[in-house]
Image 1 (tube, helix red, strand yellow):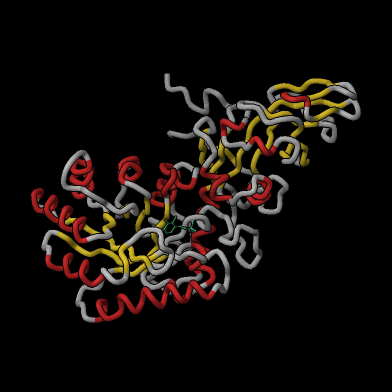
Image 2: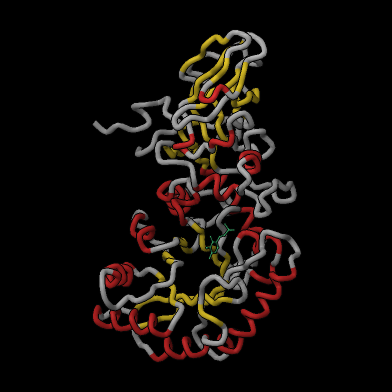
Length: 407
Ligand SMILES: *Cc1c(COP(=O)(O)O)cnc(C)c1O
């Protein structure tokens, strides 16, 4: 028997709204000139949302004012992630640069990548040579992307060595240059002048190369911040990640860009106990009831990515009311003070992380409490939390309607 969330309906789950993804992509497309391509970043299991589900939504679901597929290409961090994606008609861009590919186990992965038609990132001439020779031996042409370091100083081809690398690629008939890109260091800060400085370096390093070519490779600079804050960075293709998942690139909600969080983390109350005034809750006895109350148990813990630092600080939502997480967060359990929701019963839904940006349990609020950003919070949500697609029916209510997975 196939045991899934329908078998265990009360299992903690991450509800993924296909409508919210489409909504966010519409907001993104509105900022772009027609014809600008979108590379949807689905690295790190689609920022924790479940790459299968997100790619399925992007490729196979129709939505108003969006093409189907809704994006032009998928971006992943490494070849293992590309291999984990379901069959798709879209190109796949692998961001981590290939190194030392010709010998050893990396070669098999590169052969697979070339056969699959993935766009491989290269940062050096030796890497270009390796891929070219492997492609030649397969009688295939490898698609390549050159990531240029325009001032983030982390990875990519230096501007000084770029022309040599481009000559090398041109001289190899088994290589096809798909795109040239760079990554912005400060695009999360609107109006940061360094965005334009990096763009200027990228353009002066690539303009003449592009202008003198008949078949022009794509140029791509913008992540989510670039999309919203620096239109000059859009060029031929943008690479949204966090904004597609409904989080503002500044990591603070902004109503000028009403992005909708795609994920809502829900669990159920598995028990409720009566605690007398003076009782201490959980490990270390860190919280003491100052009045008689009821303590609710939620089967989510730090092993699921619900940070231990939320103990005594975060809120969850029960029957529409924010209730405090009291005592320490355990590996598998969290305790709530249900004093303000006397009607709460075993089995009731608990919102662990809300999809309302203004909720006290929003990804913004939780990330702030954990002294991090929503990116980290989302990518840490563990595998026990089942990713479940939902559809919103705008005419009925704003509630999620869960639909089964694997139908
Ligand atoms: C992750 C990533 C992105 C997406 O960034 P967001 O800030 O999430 O939009 C874009 N480009 C590259 C190279 C990345 O690694």
